[in-house]
Every structure is written in C-alpha cells, then in structure tokens.
Amino acid sequence: MLRIITCQNATLLLEKQADDALPTGARASLWLHLRYCPYCKRYARQTVLIAEWARSAAASRASSGAKLSAAAKERMRQRLSAAG
Amino acid sequence: MTPPTPVPAQWPERYGDELFSFARSRVSDADVAEELVQETFLSALDGLATFRAEASERTWLFVILRRKIIDHYRRQARATQVSLDELSEGGATEADFFAPANGHWTGPQAPASWLNADAALEQQELHDILQRCQQRLPPQQEAVFALRFIEELSAEEICQELGLSSANYWVIVHRAKLQLRRCLEKHGLGKN
Image 1 (cartoon, one colour):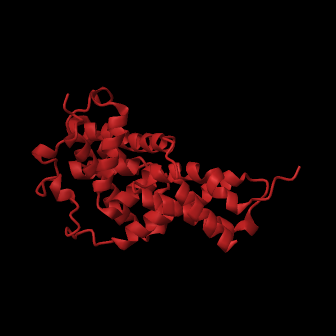
Image 2 (cartoon, chains in turn red, blue):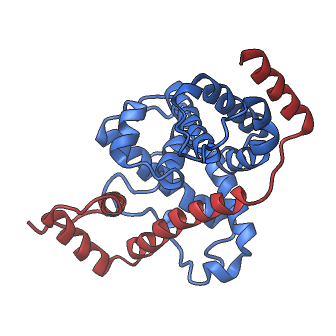
Image 3 (cartoon, each protein chain N blue to C red):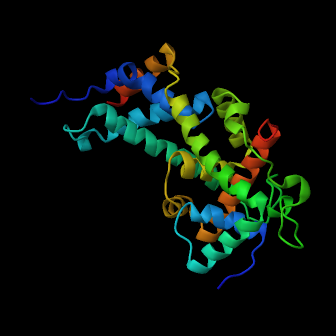
C-alpha cells in the first residue's frame, strides 16, 4: 500500500534499503517521498557517499606505512619467546 | 615443498609493521592498535596447532587481527550500551533532526547540497574530517558504524556480535549516519 511517509521514515528506509530489498509497499512509499522531497533526495546520495568515503579512508590509512616502534617489536618478541 | 614452520619470535619483525598499519587504519588510538597487534601474535601462538601450512602465515595473522578489531568494537559497544531513549550519553536523537510534530527535517538540519563535495575538499582532508566526525559519535554508534561500513559485517552479524535487536540496530545506524552527515556539513561540505 502506498503511504505518505515522513522524512524521518524515509531516511531510515534509505539505510535499510542499502542492506536489503525493501518490501514493495515501503519501496513505493520511499520512491514517492523522494519524488517530492529534495532534502531526502540529497540525503540518499550523501549517505551512500559517507559509506564510500569511510571505506576509502580506512583503505588509504592502511597503506600509510605506519610503523611499530623497535621497542614495541622487542617487547612483543620477548612475550612470544616467554609464552612459546 | 613443505612451507616453513612459523617462527613466532620472528613475527614482530616480519609482520609487525604491516599489521600495525592495518590496525591503525581501523582504530584511532596508536596504543590500542599496538595492543591489538600484540594480542594477534599471542592468539596466533596459542593457535599454532590449528595453522594450516597451505595458508600463508601473513594471511592467517591478518585474519586473527581482523577478529581482534571486531572484538575491540564489540567491547566498546557493549561497555557503553545505553537505552536508546537515554540522552545522557550526549548523542543526538531523531528529535534533533526531525520536527516531532510532523517528522520532517527541521529547518537548519535539512541537508544542503554537496554538489561539489569531491572538489571542495582534498581527499586527504575529507578522510581526516570523516575520521574526526566518526570519533565524535557516541561509542556504541562509532562501533556499529565501523563494523558495518568499514569491516563490512552484515546487519545480522552485527546484531549477533553486539546483542542488539534488529530494530535497535537500525536506530543506531540511522542516528550515526544523521550525525556524521551533519558533522561533515559543519566542517566544510555543502558550502559551495
């Protein structure tokens, strides 16, 4: 059934939709809402961007070449030797 | 040819930097990242008997580290679990974004256009702002966001890990995204 939904509902449905297909009624209601609500339409794009940026930011940090200090490595080596 | 048997005492030198760099990309605190690497090595040592020689030692250590990162977020989320109605944690609720009377965006919270979002900020700057915004989330939201969008666990897996109901999970994801969106906008996006 096609229902008029609020921006609060619409943005929640957008999050759910990214995870799994919505039931037909909810999908239709969201579609209708996005037709007339420019703000939620923006939110729909932005929430996807945020997820993409979070992934790419983590990936770029992972290749940043952070290094363990020599002291930390030595501490770990000693713990491993003691435990092994 | 039989692959060489792992030599645990050599792990810190051989794999320490790489594992640490990965851990640092997932948790902002360097000491926590270091601890995760150490825990990884100790767990690997405990599980040495289960190591399959056909897998690479490096891959095996990364699998263990990833599990440690998920455990770290699980502890963070569980230690700070509060009722969703509680505001004491300082987190925003739906009422901060939507008018309670009609559920529509309240004026100043309505999303601005990010038309030139990619052009407005250098990528590095964007990543730094996003990381700072993530750190400002209430701990439970930060953990759920990281598990879902960085570790890419499914909603079902996160609910299991954190002992959340599906309804609560969605409220947390929704609130985290609303706050991150607003935080990014405050720090430069949408000012075209």
